[in-house]
Amino acid sequence: MSLSKSVLAQGKRLLMEAALKLNANTRSLNALSLRELAREAGLNPNTFYRHFKDFDELGMAIIEEMTKEIRQPLRALRRQAAESVVPPGTPQDSWQENPQLNLAKSMQVNKATVKLFFDYVANNPNAFILGVRELHGASPVLRKALRKVMVDFAQDMADDIQDLNLLPELDPAILYDVSETVSREMFQLSMDYIEQPDKRDEICLKAEKLIISLTTGSAVLHGYGPLLLGALAGTDWTSL
Image 1: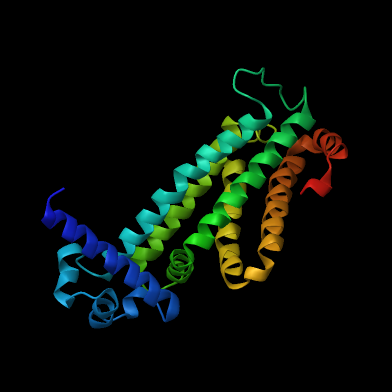
Image 2 (image 1 turned 180 degrees about the vertical axis):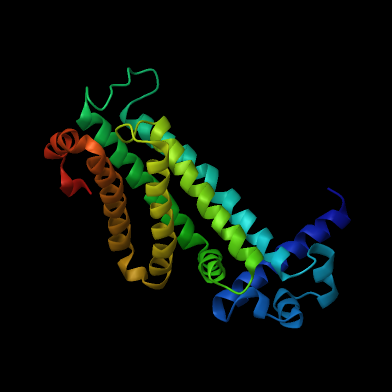
């Protein structure tokens, strides 16, 4: 990488970090002034326009980076957690054949992905504060971008539930609706996790139980009640 590109990359990084800090401590991105952002970043105000045309573009860069850092790792971890219960190459029993095994797999995926999500929240609190704030903020550009992020995360979850056989077979539209609700709830719980560090274990447990309630409850409503009740009867809930 050339020196000029290295300098540009560093300047962009400093501006993004400064924006996250100011947003978390004060107000929405578009309420910041260019001078205070540059001062926080330790840069000349004119440097901003080498990297971004406006504050919306700055916000988009932050959202895209956050999404890139968590989206694929979540999908990979779901598969890894499922394979820890049913290793690759093992015959995949259907829910009708072995509901307890499939429920155990589903719960293991749930626990592992909740932990990864909240670990990322703990390491990137300002990014989540920005996300929650801008989801209902003044910028239509950032609101639209964050809604798209929620849609993508929900679709990933729905696809993984189906591909990994984490629930009895449900219509894809139903799976998406459940996954969208889970995604939004997790996004909101991220603020509790940030603001209440003494209750983080409790919040993780709440998230795990919420996901189980939403996913298995949907399956029960769509005709899988006896199957799931049979599986749940043999489940050790103290492991949650």
